[in-house]
Structures are given as structure tokens and as C-alpha cells.
Image (cartoon, rainbow, N blue to C red; front, side, top):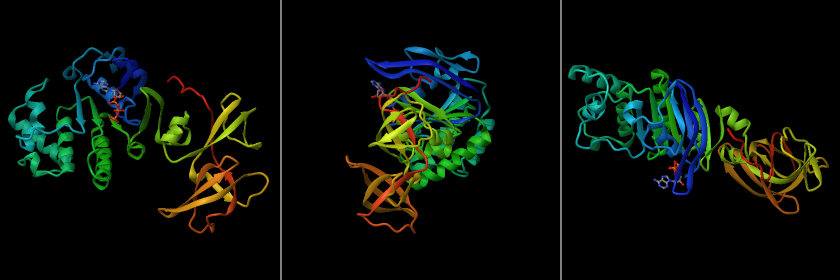
Length: 351
Ligand code: ATP
């Protein structure tokens, strides 16, 4: 099922939680709504579900305008972070709930039981149908919640921070597993996360939200390699930035012109965004920015150097291979393999 979201607006009082969102979600894709706290992710997901009535705009499920339809009419499955299972019901009855009491074709008890057992197999909880939620781990409960959402054979699956409350190790396992389930069932799946690693690892495409607006929609590679806005650059992956003057397609840092790969900004004050792995340290020669190492720390198999740059002591971070011999206090040159320049006051593009 393909979803089209057109100029969707939602205000709480005077506060614009969604300020005209346009987004096309392809049939069968797994798409992440990613953004910091308060960016409007949950509001958007709830509007798709039909739990929140928007103040303007439309939502199409395929060709059907679902904007005014109820949750049941939209036939979506959803899992919210704190969407508790029914405590007094066994796993089997929790999963069967929507099949027994929801809309749609009635199934016999034998068919329902058969379907529940299939779903338990899918979410790898075979044999646990007789347990109560209190007899399950957090990860197992989330999987039951997912099985319950899948049980109604939804056209669209909506997940709000489905693994948010779980510890890092369990989360990682469930992520891989969710991807597998998605590939097996082929549901159009929209999930909310504020965790960029989760979004990048799991999804076909990522929609980045900020202050109720979409900043960029793209594959994880597109978002990472070609961030459309300074916000996306800073939010996805590590980066530091330097103040520069943008002049005739060049970025000038303290009088030194840097060759830059993409300037689509008008002349004026700007910022150069650089990822730590794109900084190479060299001898401080004429053609490069000069700096001084003020800190070194271990980061996995690498070391990170904090470098103070220029007369205003701007900070740049560099990721160094372990064999590179440097010490705190060294004067170095900085060569930037890749970077992006944005005008200081650049507005996000209208998507
Ligand atoms: P989080 O990651 O913290 O869940 P989010 O990106 O999902 O954040 P939303 O829950 O969509 O953000 O909220 C967007 C904005 O709308 C926030 O500033 C929030 O305070 C506000 N908001 C959400 N629900 C309501 C409500 N019922 N009444 C008033 N304001 C609300």
C-alpha cells in the first residue's frame, strides 16, 4: 500500500507540531521518521494511523483519501513504545484480539488459533502462547505486540519507537529481526525513532524531521553523503563545523581559500561542515588550515583528536588511524577530503 501525505498541518494551540508535510511512502518500503525530541514524528505517525485529526492537508492510502477515515477503516497495525499488552490475557488471546473483535471477515476459533501459532513462529516465540505478559521479558513483550499488530493483516504497519525501552543489546537483535519480518511480510512499514543509527541501519529510506517540517527524505546513503541542510549534517553522523566566508564558489577561512566540492549557497557568511573521518592531519604547510591538537581519546579501533583551529580557536575533530603518531600540543595542518558548505542563515528547502 502506497501512502501520500499532502501538506499535512497540525497545531496544538498556537504551536505548529506539523507545518505542511509532504511525503510519499512507497508500497512495501520500510521508512524511518527520524528527528530529535519534539520534531513531530509521533504526531505524523498518529495522523497516519487516524489517531490524530490534522488541521489541514490530506493522507492518501493508495488512491483512497483516508484523511477523514477512522483507525479501523484505515486498517493499520501499530505498536507504540508503551502500548501495553492486555495483562489479564494470555499471549494467544492478546494476539487474537484484533481477529476476534476487530472489523473484517470473521474467522473460526480454529482458524484464529492456527494464525496465532503461525505468527508466534514468525516472531520466534513458539510455545509461549499460554503465558501471561508478566511472564515474558521486555523484548518478548515487544514481539508479542508486533505479532498482535500483524494479526489483522494490516495494509500499513506503524511503529513508534518500538524498541525504545529495551537495552542496547536486545535492541540490536530486534532491529535485525524486524528487518527480516518486514522482508518476509512485505508490509509498508513506517517507524519512528530518534536514534539515527537505528534509522540508518534498518530502513530503505529515512525522512528527517525538524521543528514540524521535513528536512530531507532519502536512502541512508543519500542522507549521510549528501545532507540537504546544516541540520541534517549535524544530526546524522559526527561532524564539526568552521565559520567561513563564501565567495564565488569558494569557502574562505581566515583569509585562506579552500577548494570546496559543493557550494550551492549565495555569497556571505557560512559554515563548513566536516566529518571527523574526512580530516587528514599533515605537516602545517601553506595550502592547509593550521591547528593545534588539544586532546586525544580512544574511539573503538581509532583515536579522536580535538584540534583548535585559527585565531578564534574553533574546534575540529579528526578520526585518526591508530598508527598515526601524534601528541597533544602538536602543531598540524588539516586537509579536508570532503565537506559541505552552507550559508549561515540558509532556510531548509521546501519538500
Ligand atoms: P519525541 O521523540 O520526544 O516523542 P516527537 O518528535 O515524536 O518527539 P511529537 O510527540 O510529535 O514529537 O510532538 C511534537 C510537538 O508537539 C512537541 O513540541 C510536543 O510538545 C507537542 N505536542 C504533542 N502532543 C501534544 C498535545 N497533545 N498537546 C500539546 N502539545 C503537544
